[in-house]
Structure formats: structure tokens, C-alpha cells
Image 1: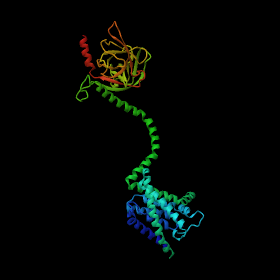
Image 2: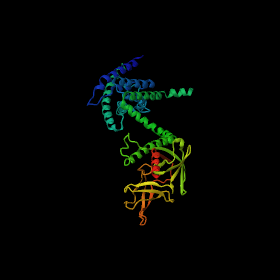
Image 3: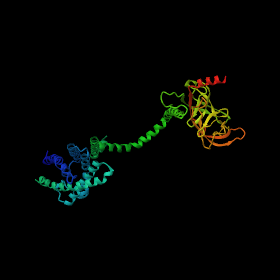
Image 4: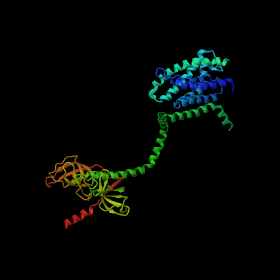
Length: 169
Length: 273
């Protein structure tokens, strides 16, 4: 097990614990719980094994669901985002452009931001659709997705900066 | 085989994704009653068409059975209807301790003549099924006739479309009694005789069975008055009536057994001696 794998494993555990113990209990403005655990789906190497990544996405979603008794909504949305990530990467960084090996090794801020926005947007829409699971709650779904999305984006954009230093050393 | 394996390897991500998606749907389904209900509803939506299709086929083949059960149910209802019709004659008839002397059976019509002046109907129930001579026969819409002769498995009925048959009727509004018989022309055209002229008649008044004969219980609607005129010489009305139901269009009939018929007949014989 090399250093990168170890770092990922530790990230996995720490992010799950942080999400369950801290971020899922924030209730900002009464309803916003930023989903910082998605950072794991961001920092996993872009050129890593996709099959393993799908399994990891499933596992992290399942862990969150398991520890916060929230049904299968996290599992389903995290899994879907993990599956869709290669497409999102291509959309964010360009089909022909050089795709970085790691999210944190790249300097194109706008592309990184677009990537984050796509990933979080898709995830939040799926998650809240599943939570409300009703056509009559479309407005609520959009509202929750949007506000949670803003805070998740902010927090993930900030915390992803820690990884650069870790990887460089 | 190699190709299948290749395809599996090539699409392993998609397959893995779909499998895990199914698993997470199971979690969602298992962990929350709300999601369970919703998912079941969507499942129903998908399977509805299929169920409808198989149901319609199944229903078609069940029709015969359904018909039989409906007939049996109708028979019971007919009996209740007769009972409730008879409240004026047999007060407190719906109380269990009060005896109602009529009993209902059902039968299918297998031959029905209506082109002659004296018509007969054959039904598929006979002495084995408890059919007796002189039982009254009803359809769902009125009177059909009276059992004429009985064999083991079949019976013949003197149809109401027989000029020899006279049925005791009562006019609903005026309460006058008369006897109904066929004119011998159209299957719904009848005449009523023996209505005395002091009765007040109106066109459209309903005809009920009179309850004065031992054949039919009181209160079965048969038809309505279509025309009447005073007959100056005889003192009786000449009344034309129209049946509610065309007796030539019969598929099944109800047989009414009058349990006290023998008793009444003996009494009448004693009087006539």
C-alpha cells in the first residue's frame, strides 16, 4: 500500500466521521447540511481504477447512510456521481485538453470549479429528489439543492486546498 | 464465451453501477415506509398494463362462472324482493318468525315460442330439481307464465303469450282488481278484463300481480295501462296494457314455489262442492 492509497483511506474514514458527526448536524439556517464527504469523490485520482472508484463511491455513501440512519439516498447519489465522474471530468476540463492526474495537481481554477459544481449539482439534485421523492415537492427539491450546493461548494473548494500540500510532499 | 467475457470486462463499470444502483434502491425501499409506498406505486404503474391484459382474458373465461354466481345472487334478491312486496298482505313478513310461503328457484330457457296464439316455454329444470306443476314463473322484469307439465329434467310453461292464460292483476293507484290476458298480436300488447267501472283509472298506472291467485305473490310489477275506455253496456272497462318486458326475449327465469298451494286448493275444492 503506497502513500497515496493510505492517504485516500485515511481521507475516507475522516470524511465519513466528519460528515456524520459534524456537517450533518449543522442545520445552517435550519436546513443546510453541507455534504463535505463528497470531497473524497473529488480527490480520488482522475486516472485511477474506475471500477474500484464505483465501489468506493458506493461504500462512502453507504457508510454515511449507515451511520446517520438516512435510508439509501446518500448511497444512491454518491454511487451515481462516482459512475458519472469520467463524463463530468471530460465536460469540465475539455475532451481534447490534457486531463490532470489529480484534482489538486491542476492549476486551472475555472475548470476545477466547473468540475466541482457539476459533481455537487448532480449529487445534490439526485439526493434531494430521493429524499422528497414526490413531484409535488419540486420547488423544495430545487431550493434545498441550491442552498446546500452553495455551502458544499464553498467548503469543498476550501478543504481541497489541504490536499495539494499533502501530495506535494 | 470469450466474447461474452470481453463484453463483461468492457462494460464492467456500467454493470457494477447498475447492480449497486439496484442494491441502493433496496436500501431505500427497506429503510423507509414512505419510499416503499412510492416505489411500490411506480412498480404498480409498470405492471398495471400487464395485469389489465391478463385480467381481461381471465375475465372472459370466467364469464360463465360469474353469470352463475350472479344468477344465484339474483335468486336470493328476488326472494327478498317478493317478501318486501308482500308487506301489505303479510305484515311483519321481514321478521324471522313470520312465515313467507313462496320460495324461488332459477332455470334457463331452452325453447321459447311466441309466434303462435298459444305459446309454450321449455326450461332446463324438471322434477329432479324440484319443479312442480302449477308453479309460477317470473323473469327479471315480470311474469312469464305457469308450469304446465314436468318431466325429469325439463318442464314446459304456459307462456303469458297464451290466450288461455289469465293472470290476476291489481292496478297500483286505483287498487282495482282485474285479469290480464294476451291480445294475440304484438308480444307486449295485453288487455285487462273484469275491472268494474267505479274504479278511477289513469293511463300509465302500473299493473302489479294481484296476490289473489295462489300462483303469484302480491306486488310484482308487470306493465302499465296504455289506453282504456268505458263500456256503456257491460259495466266493465276495456283496458289495453303494455308489458315492461318483452316475453319473447327470455334467457333465464325464476320459478316460484307456493308452499301452501295444496292447502289453498283443498279449501277451494271444499267451497266448490
